[in-house]
Amino acid sequence: MANNKLTLLYFAAPGRAAVSRMILAYAGADYVNKTVDFTEFGKMKSSLPFGQLPTLTLEDGKVLCQSLTIARYLANRYHLAGHTEMCKAEADEAVDTLNDIQSKLFGVFFSTDKKAKMAECMPACESALKNLEKRLESRGGQHLAGNCLTWADLMLHGVVTLLCAVGGEDALKGCDKLKNLNERVGSIPNIKKYDATLQSS
Ligand SMILES: N[C@@H](CCC(=O)N[C@@H](CS)C(=O)NCC(=O)O)C(=O)O
Figure 1 (cartoon, protein in one colour):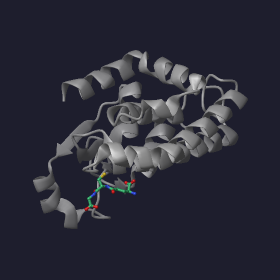
Figure 2 (cartoon, protein in one colour; figure 1 turned 30 degrees about the vertical axis):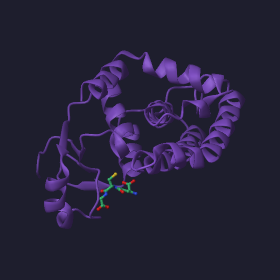
Figure 3 (cartoon, helix red, strand yellow; figure 1 turned 180 degrees about the vertical axis):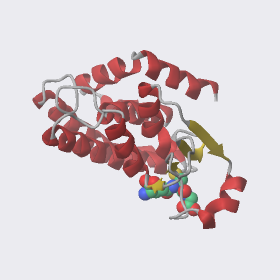
């Protein structure tokens, strides 16, 4: 049986690998963070199971695709998926909501007129964040699922970072509990270290 090191393959940018890299950083996991540029991606595209990144290669050589599948696998592996079925479902619900927001923000990031695209996306992002704020409040205000840290909280931190990078921080107006949770996640030592890698890249 192959004995590869756990390897996450993606571009250097956080993008769709952000939540997986945060889970791995939080867990202090021993893994290979393999990055490629667009030329290298072009050469390997046809060999990738879905022609897309990210992928995660496990120790036995099996390859997982789809960013949220990879992140959910890692969350289960490193005990960040939630401790009960309901907590897992709550975390999944928050992750899907955050993924909807993230997809819109990627559209802004890659737009030539970021300001106009952000203005177009703002109502949907604001509304999703306000709904998530209500969910957070109804679940005790500390965590998005199960009153314990899950990958959903880490993903919130990644999405807020992206939101700020595209100039959309106003979408968090009135979401004080989400802002507070984001700050708490950002103050976790291993997440601080992860954030520092973004600033230096
Ligand atoms: N649903 C997929 C989407 C993956 C995706 O669109 N990946 C982009 C990079 S962020 C990609 O590989 N684009 C190149 C292509 O599709 O040719 C996921 O969440 O992993």
